[in-house]
Length: 386
Image 1 (cartoon, rainbow, N blue to C red):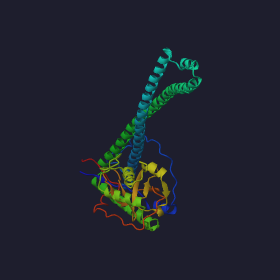
Image 2 (image 1 turned 180 degrees about the horizontal axis):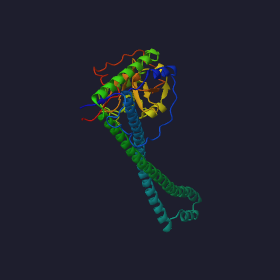
Image 3 (image 1 turned 90 degrees about the vertical axis):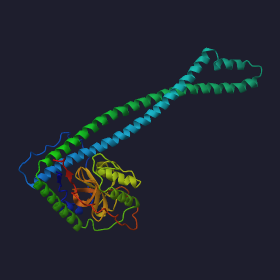
Image 4 (image 1 turned 45 degrees about the horizontal axis):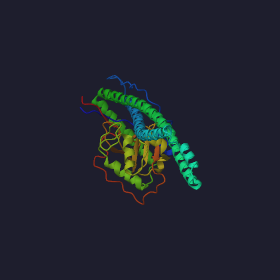
């Protein structure tokens, strides 16, 4: 039996606060979560629908926060791996130069041992019958001496360079090991917290699940209505050319599954979708929702234009792409594929613009949406088959 729940994600009061305060403060960067999963309530625990919804929200937010931290670690590990590969190539080149220098130094040592030194040649030139010829050949000797001195300098420099590269390579490899261990811990944290959600859902009756979904629809509808009434979404603004491309890409992904840690093209998590949408538009943006919120330029919600990113929850653990008309495309969570949702379907933190310096298009038409683009719960989650 497929089980689906929905979560209330915004309130009318929150919408009013957003409208009154279009600029929002940046939160501190999140710390690593406690790897232990939040406890699931016992089956049949006496509580109302709102209480169940709050507990599910807590479980989900913990899993999503851990998932975004995992994404951040995975991105850093990718960069460190690329750096290690680059250092390996540089170290190989430095060792080749060092070996070449050692061979040249060996030839110099043999020449000196066999009496073919520059000094003995110089003496012979001084005893020559033709002083002008001796002077001319003396310049040749000086060049030879300079060349051999350069051999020694290159050898010394190559040794130092190889040592520096080896030390940097060791440091990067050590960092890789630390990141790999952290990534595994964060992956296990996400899996544990998702298992906690599944356990809780499995304990709910059909009636409780239906009541949860109805409560979510009611609260999201009220929040979206209040946000629209506040005037925050009253203006129609065309996107930039890049924003229009990002919207088209995101709309083209509707229906694809949510998979945490995924960045396309077959599946996505929330920030995987937004980062790939803007990558398709030719602009690289940070991979995680926290870094998108931290690094990109913030804009008031009342100034949203299609292509902007809408960031949710106090720790910026969820993100969606605004497409206009008060709607976003998002990858909500496991069990709810990429879909179109009301902007107020999550507790709003603020909005950011990846291309603040780009001028808007003269006109914009929302791409045609699939018939089932808005179907399903905006934060639905499917439990395993019972």
